[in-house]
Image (cartoon, rainbow, N blue to C red; front, side, top):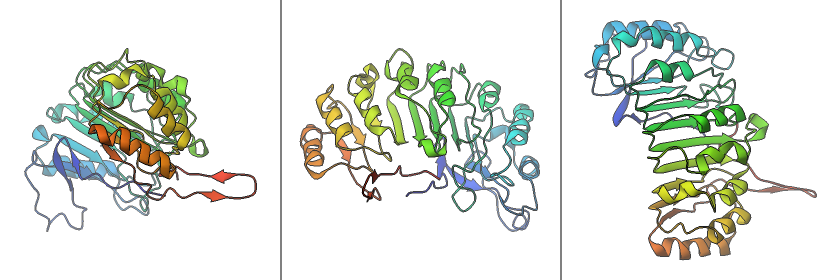
Length: 319
């Protein structure tokens, strides 16, 4: 099992933790436009709410030049969603004219397990910040992602241990003409990941997302089905990098990748955390690696468990 990590950069800027009240007087602050600002409150026994931390931030920093905000943990994120946080960000729009990057829910497992994070409707953030170029969200429980129109968004990331099918359909139905990078952690049914291949069809068909160059459909327990669909998906021809990592990819899915449309135009194919057998791994390396594709075939922590009736395989990030 792998675990989500804190973001280290956003919009090409290093992430800087806005100091807690106890450290505020002794921590020098960088220039407001030199970093992406992670604003957090403690998930457990917090003495300051996230909105209070944000108010301190707005008073201490020239928000008119802030380019990226990373929403870290908030109080009792395992029980309460970010509705007040979303409201505070929307209220602050006039003071954030330069904001181009926004990530909601940047928490490590010790702060809140990814599938415990209570999320909300993120549509208002995309509607409310039409100049955003990067948007990301972590956590699938309660996540609502309606179909949106956004003309400037270049990168969209949704990290979950289980992404609701309705949210997948919302992303797939969105009008995102500038999107270059799309990364979806679809997760497992055990944690609410109930999407089917048909929910991904508008993405795979290639009729949308004309500028897409990177596609990640990963961390899924239907990774073989995704690989099979990808074998004939029109969108693949325009991709430069493709990520099918972190999921339950077996020889069935690997064979589909080899027998389908050529993938030799890709710069990189990421299949790390997989359940591929040795001969198929060698064949992938021979066909794709030999054609100049950078391959990540690292099995990582993809360990099988077997009993009399079943072989158990797991996604990289579940709970």
